Image (cartoon, rainbow, N blue to C red; front, side, top):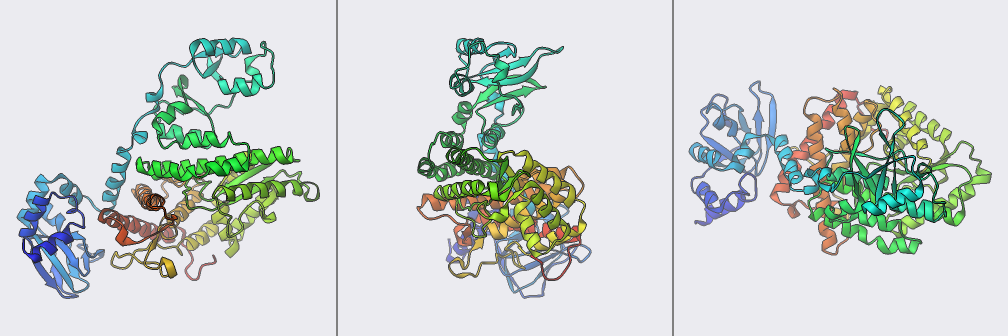
Length: 625
């Protein structure tokens, strides 16, 4: 092959849809390519012209127009155009002009037709647009992970062992021993139809019966667990894993039409969940000292890398990492209460930010706060809560969760307040959206009560959901603030790089990728009164309304998933290479597949921000935040 053709072949092989093409097929394509040069401003194709070629941009930039003359898209190096005319009526459907001096490779219609009919990957690519390609890329990952596609019924090996709530402790232990099970589902038989009332596990027998030396005649209803966390039989294994992580439960009843079909245990899921994040959570609660917690904290990164290598999606990984971080916090609070004694008044320890959203990764700091009972008296009680907060935050830092540089931690007196004060703060931030109020809203409106009287956190969620949805002024200012963080996509779909010292010529996938999406999703969720915290769950709530145009929710979900997974892979590779992980990637380190679909994802974010300004009539001018 001539040197010129080799150069053409090498360039095509870096971009879709040619990067997955068989070598012999690609050689045949290259051998029939024509090369054309267009000066800036010149017409390439006109509406109604005969479609004769598929165009590939070697260099320069091209503008695509609708029939009305309205600008439709801008394309740059590695992009193709002209396929729709070749597939439809053999005439040009979208006129094109050279925006810059452009060098194009022209693939004859006959070659295109042959590829379209014989190469399935090529046909899939040219038949769908950017956002549909992004959906295909995301769904391909989901289908490749068994945790995402296998239902919980696969883990059920036998029907549940049940007993009435009227039995005694000794009888419950005998049934569990004879049946060889670690849990017993207890049924209320007082009504017309038996209903599930609770569960007793071998762990309960040890901690609630043997440790307390309870008599064998103790009614089982006195020690059974009620208010059960359950899962539907059609749920997936990954959903069971997330439920166990989030609620720190070891047994999960599986229901079918409200009747127990089986019980899956921690051990059942671990057999499938080879990343062992659930095993790590169990190990956390066995530690008796901060030193012990610190010793096992190194396993967090190992678990993260294993999940990435098993092709888990970003929701699974983010939820698992948040579950692990939440477990470290909960165990530190338990140890703190053992050290300092029981709290003088009830309290709730809140996680904020990515941990509250179940979107935490390995590059993270700690954001937390305390809600105190309204009977709290600073001079009598604050010494205890300050000591507890310091113990927990220092312990988290020892386990790899950095101190918050903005001091958003329970050690800060400002973020250790009675419930009534928190309610006043949240109301004031919504009623008076000044700079500091908007900043605080972005941080504190992602919250999750993880220890203590968590109902206090639920009251704050209810206040936010009810009040923010009624304040168009607040939403408008919050939207304007969100528009400050734009995706790193330039005028010609080229990447816009960071220009800050050692991170120069990189893309920050958190600050310019996942964070802008999280911001705009939060605003839409607030507008529809959702209490959901996770971005994917917020999108589901938004999708149940008519808040966004058709298809927007799916596009945002795919964009968030793809940007997040590229960020996750980048961090996992750094850990495997012995480097400190971060959020900054260099485009040249990405595969052509990742570069192309990142552009698609960033374009979705850009379009969503335009709609955000329109939807909330975000005031123009300098941001308050």
